[in-house]
Length: 186
Image (cartoon, rainbow, N blue to C red; front, side, top):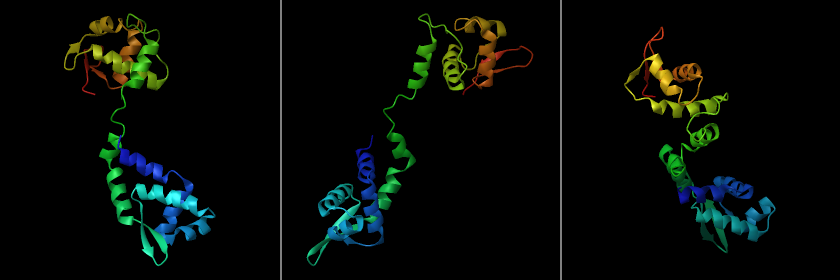
Protein backbone atom coordinates (compact mmCIF):
# COMPACT_ATOMS: atom_id res chain seq x y z
CA UNK A 1 0.00 0.00 0.00
CA UNK A 2 1.26 3.47 -0.77
CA UNK A 3 2.85 4.95 2.35
CA UNK A 4 2.20 8.40 0.91
CA UNK A 5 -1.52 7.68 0.72
CA UNK A 6 -1.57 6.49 4.34
CA UNK A 7 0.40 9.58 5.50
CA UNK A 8 -1.99 11.83 3.60
CA UNK A 9 -5.07 10.31 5.24
CA UNK A 10 -3.44 10.29 8.68
CA UNK A 11 -2.64 13.98 8.31
CA UNK A 12 -6.28 14.74 7.54
CA UNK A 13 -7.78 12.24 10.01
CA UNK A 14 -8.35 14.83 12.70
CA UNK A 15 -11.17 17.37 12.93
CA UNK A 16 -8.85 20.18 14.06
CA UNK A 17 -6.40 19.52 11.22
CA UNK A 18 -9.28 19.66 8.76
CA UNK A 19 -10.33 22.99 10.28
CA UNK A 20 -6.75 24.26 9.94
CA UNK A 21 -6.68 23.22 6.28
CA UNK A 22 -10.02 24.99 5.77
CA UNK A 23 -8.76 28.18 7.41
CA UNK A 24 -5.48 28.11 5.52
CA UNK A 25 -7.38 27.63 2.27
CA UNK A 26 -8.68 31.18 2.78
CA UNK A 27 -5.50 32.93 3.96
CA UNK A 28 -2.23 32.52 5.87
CA UNK A 29 -2.22 32.43 9.69
CA UNK A 30 0.29 32.30 12.50
CA UNK A 31 0.15 29.61 15.19
CA UNK A 32 -1.25 32.13 17.69
CA UNK A 33 -4.01 33.22 15.33
CA UNK A 34 -5.00 29.63 14.58
CA UNK A 35 -4.93 28.80 18.31
CA UNK A 36 -7.30 31.70 19.05
CA UNK A 37 -9.65 30.80 16.18
CA UNK A 38 -9.80 27.12 17.16
CA UNK A 39 -9.70 27.72 20.91
CA UNK A 40 -6.68 25.43 21.26
CA UNK A 41 -3.28 25.82 22.89
CA UNK A 42 -0.54 27.06 20.55
CA UNK A 43 1.45 23.88 21.25
CA UNK A 44 -1.51 21.77 20.06
CA UNK A 45 -1.81 23.85 16.90
CA UNK A 46 1.95 23.50 16.31
CA UNK A 47 1.61 19.72 16.61
CA UNK A 48 -1.21 19.68 14.04
CA UNK A 49 0.75 21.96 11.70
CA UNK A 50 3.74 19.64 12.00
CA UNK A 51 1.62 16.68 10.88
CA UNK A 52 0.20 18.66 7.97
CA UNK A 53 3.67 19.85 7.04
CA UNK A 54 5.06 16.28 7.04
CA UNK A 55 2.37 15.38 4.52
CA UNK A 56 3.38 18.39 2.40
CA UNK A 57 0.03 20.14 2.86
CA UNK A 58 1.24 23.30 4.60
CA UNK A 59 4.38 25.37 4.46
CA UNK A 60 5.75 28.08 6.71
CA UNK A 61 7.52 31.37 6.09
CA UNK A 62 8.70 34.17 8.35
CA UNK A 63 6.86 37.48 8.58
CA UNK A 64 8.41 39.91 11.05
CA UNK A 65 8.46 38.14 14.42
CA UNK A 66 6.00 35.43 13.42
CA UNK A 67 6.07 32.20 11.49
CA UNK A 68 3.10 32.21 9.17
CA UNK A 69 1.58 29.07 7.70
CA UNK A 70 -0.17 28.70 4.39
CA UNK A 71 -1.85 25.87 2.58
CA UNK A 72 0.27 24.39 -0.16
CA UNK A 73 -2.62 24.38 -2.65
CA UNK A 74 -0.59 23.20 -5.63
CA UNK A 75 0.78 20.23 -3.70
CA UNK A 76 -2.68 19.41 -2.34
CA UNK A 77 -4.17 19.44 -5.84
CA UNK A 78 -1.29 17.46 -7.34
CA UNK A 79 -1.32 14.87 -4.54
CA UNK A 80 -5.10 14.54 -4.77
CA UNK A 81 -5.00 14.01 -8.51
CA UNK A 82 -2.18 11.48 -8.31
CA UNK A 83 -3.15 9.61 -5.13
CA UNK A 84 -6.83 9.35 -6.00
CA UNK A 85 -6.22 8.02 -9.49
CA UNK A 86 -7.79 4.64 -10.21
CA UNK A 87 -4.34 3.07 -10.49
CA UNK A 88 -3.11 4.34 -7.13
CA UNK A 89 -6.31 3.46 -5.29
CA UNK A 90 -6.32 -0.02 -6.83
CA UNK A 91 -2.70 -0.56 -5.82
CA UNK A 92 -3.70 0.10 -2.19
CA UNK A 93 -5.51 -3.24 -2.26
CA UNK A 94 -2.92 -5.13 -4.31
CA UNK A 95 -1.91 -7.47 -1.48
CA UNK A 96 -5.50 -8.45 -0.64
CA UNK A 97 -6.59 -11.96 -1.70
CA UNK A 98 -9.53 -11.20 -4.01
CA UNK A 99 -10.73 -14.80 -3.71
CA UNK A 100 -10.70 -14.94 0.11
CA UNK A 101 -14.50 -14.68 0.37
CA UNK A 102 -15.06 -17.44 -2.18
CA UNK A 103 -12.53 -19.68 -0.42
CA UNK A 104 -14.24 -19.16 2.94
CA UNK A 105 -17.69 -19.94 1.52
CA UNK A 106 -16.38 -23.06 -0.22
CA UNK A 107 -14.74 -24.23 3.04
CA UNK A 108 -17.94 -23.58 5.00
CA UNK A 109 -20.21 -25.42 2.55
CA UNK A 110 -17.97 -28.30 1.47
CA UNK A 111 -17.37 -31.72 2.94
CA UNK A 112 -13.83 -33.18 2.99
CA UNK A 113 -14.58 -35.08 -0.26
CA UNK A 114 -15.45 -31.80 -2.06
CA UNK A 115 -19.20 -32.33 -2.20
CA UNK A 116 -21.52 -29.66 -0.87
CA UNK A 117 -23.25 -30.03 2.48
CA UNK A 118 -26.04 -27.86 1.10
CA UNK A 119 -26.66 -25.36 -1.68
CA UNK A 120 -26.61 -21.87 -0.12
CA UNK A 121 -29.81 -19.87 -0.32
CA UNK A 122 -28.06 -16.53 0.20
CA UNK A 123 -27.26 -15.12 -3.24
CA UNK A 124 -23.66 -13.97 -2.59
CA UNK A 125 -22.73 -17.35 -1.11
CA UNK A 126 -24.48 -19.19 -3.93
CA UNK A 127 -22.52 -17.17 -6.49
CA UNK A 128 -19.24 -18.12 -4.76
CA UNK A 129 -20.23 -21.80 -4.89
CA UNK A 130 -21.23 -21.51 -8.56
CA UNK A 131 -17.86 -19.93 -9.43
CA UNK A 132 -16.26 -22.96 -7.78
CA UNK A 133 -18.49 -25.56 -9.44
CA UNK A 134 -18.12 -24.12 -12.94
CA UNK A 135 -14.37 -24.84 -12.82
CA UNK A 136 -15.27 -28.52 -13.35
CA UNK A 137 -16.22 -27.62 -16.93
CA UNK A 138 -13.90 -26.70 -19.78
CA UNK A 139 -14.46 -23.49 -21.76
CA UNK A 140 -15.47 -24.29 -25.34
CA UNK A 141 -16.49 -27.88 -24.64
CA UNK A 142 -20.13 -28.92 -24.97
CA UNK A 143 -21.82 -31.20 -22.47
CA UNK A 144 -25.01 -33.23 -22.75
CA UNK A 145 -27.49 -32.87 -19.91
CA UNK A 146 -26.59 -36.40 -18.83
CA UNK A 147 -22.88 -35.54 -18.66
CA UNK A 148 -23.68 -32.28 -16.85
CA UNK A 149 -25.61 -34.26 -14.23
CA UNK A 150 -22.73 -36.72 -13.81
CA UNK A 151 -20.27 -33.90 -13.14
CA UNK A 152 -22.65 -31.89 -10.95
CA UNK A 153 -23.56 -34.95 -8.86
CA UNK A 154 -19.98 -34.87 -7.53
CA UNK A 155 -20.95 -31.58 -5.87
CA UNK A 156 -24.58 -32.13 -4.88
CA UNK A 157 -27.50 -34.49 -5.59
CA UNK A 158 -29.74 -31.60 -6.71
CA UNK A 159 -28.17 -31.33 -10.15
CA UNK A 160 -31.22 -29.58 -11.63
CA UNK A 161 -30.82 -26.63 -9.25
CA UNK A 162 -27.08 -26.40 -9.92
CA UNK A 163 -27.67 -26.50 -13.71
CA UNK A 164 -30.39 -23.86 -13.52
CA UNK A 165 -28.30 -21.59 -11.27
CA UNK A 166 -25.17 -21.94 -13.41
CA UNK A 167 -27.16 -20.89 -16.49
CA UNK A 168 -28.98 -18.14 -14.58
CA UNK A 169 -25.68 -16.71 -13.34
CA UNK A 170 -24.35 -16.65 -16.90
CA UNK A 171 -21.54 -19.08 -16.08
CA UNK A 172 -22.99 -21.74 -18.38
CA UNK A 173 -25.21 -21.48 -21.44
CA UNK A 174 -27.52 -24.04 -22.99
CA UNK A 175 -29.48 -24.79 -26.08
CA UNK A 176 -33.23 -24.85 -25.58
CA UNK A 177 -35.18 -28.05 -25.03
CA UNK A 178 -32.62 -29.93 -22.94
CA UNK A 179 -29.84 -29.61 -25.51
CA UNK A 180 -26.16 -29.14 -24.85
CA UNK A 181 -24.56 -26.99 -22.16
CA UNK A 182 -21.26 -25.12 -22.35
CA UNK A 183 -19.17 -22.93 -20.07
CA UNK A 184 -19.18 -19.27 -21.01
CA UNK A 185 -16.12 -17.02 -20.99
CA UNK A 186 -17.52 -15.10 -17.98
